[in-house]
Image (cartoon, one colour):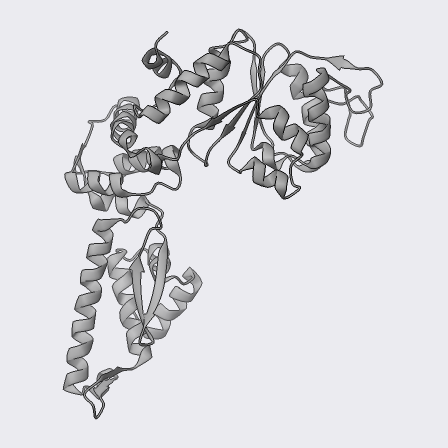
Length: 367
């Protein structure tokens, strides 16, 4: 099977060299029973690689069991993994198999393994080394044949140094490590992902595939995608679902992208700028700067005219002085217009809570 055929079969999207190299490694280790640790930010596709590892292995005819270690309360995680005997604790009304027994002969995928309590980590290590465990409340040993694939969006080496993860378990799991790069580090994949998700969504919902304008395409290519492939997929599908014009433009995507706001002060006057940490959303920045420039010009004119009724005037040196409440009202009105009166978006632009924004709107009588 070629790398391209493997990607198509198991849904691994991307044509970049980094993704192809990871697919090559995945194909090589899939046939063995060696433990694999998958590392990557949220949304990069860790579970997709885990399923590919299982699907291409000799265990593919058996079950792959997914366990999100961070979603199961600490008190019952051990029971979920290893099972229990009837009467072993309050609520244990019958014998129950754990995930290890259910996955016997197949694969156990432990997602978010960094969230596993240290006490459970000790028992997991024993199972990995001996392939044996005991159900809670049982006096007999159960033997299983399970392959372990673990995943985490945290740096496990750092967790080990912080004493939050066992060193021996870490070294036992990291026999092979697959580091999936974030989408911002493989931007050459964004284009194919956009059109793939657009085509899949329109086909599934039996709708005509909309066009994407060059401006919108530039916006998506320049964005940092902190939520990675998952965020991109959601943005494409949501924009397509809400669109009625048959053409996806900047306005269809901009409200869907998580923006990082920063407030800077200049001569004690608040100026609000969008400044993503990795990649700059140029379209929104330009529009925001134009609006701010217009506001500053208007404020300067008011100051030069000495319009005290509007809360502004010039001092003896000709320097403009504007009442702070007037600036605040102006900033709120500007943010509301820019956000098309979406209160949540406007509050994010202003770096204040929605509750505060509603109070200010009422205070200034903004309608």
